[in-house]
Image 1 (cartoon, helix red, strand yellow):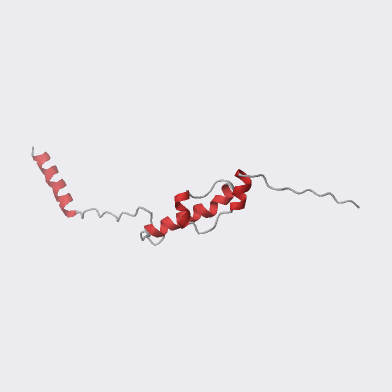
Image 2 (cartoon, helix red, strand yellow; image 1 turned 90 degrees about the vertical axis):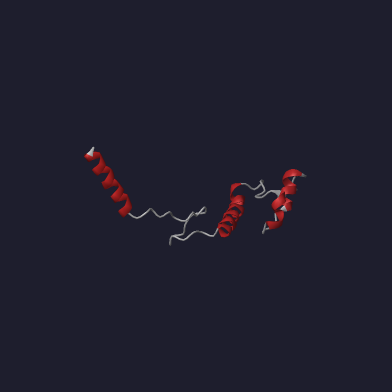
Length: 99
């Protein structure tokens, strides 16, 4: 009984002496290299910009945004390309040169 009591007393003293764990601040967007939290609004803008700029490299036919987001899209879409794909075929002129 004395051994159990001495172990419990030693454990209680150890818990009382050690400092409590400090929780880190929650950073939903991640941290910078300096350890600071990233600005969530800036991260959202950068993510959207990366998607918009990478979309033409992925697909020329798929619009990068939904129609509801057209007001926030900074670059105008190429309506001629969309018209060529969906409405009428492009005009192709072939000429042959004779010597």
